[in-house]
Length: 115
Image (tube, rainbow, N blue to C red):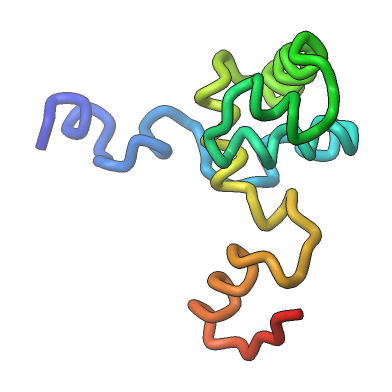
């Protein structure tokens, strides 16, 4: 074990730092519909220019949305927000035929119906 693991009694970085990967801790409800849309796209790894084209808005507006998202979710960087997006995808995406929803249901042994 490493020194920090011995000092804290855990090897889990979430427990050690007091952070949690649970979507409920990210205040997703504070986001507007557009911010949620931007957040979902951020999780796919696209850049500002691609986000701008995809959403039909100016790149400057995309940057403003990202700044708002970073602040509302209590993160410090765009990368942190992209990770939140990936981890919280099921809470953000409301499309039942989404491959992420189907994969989650399948891993739980649930039957799925794709549209």
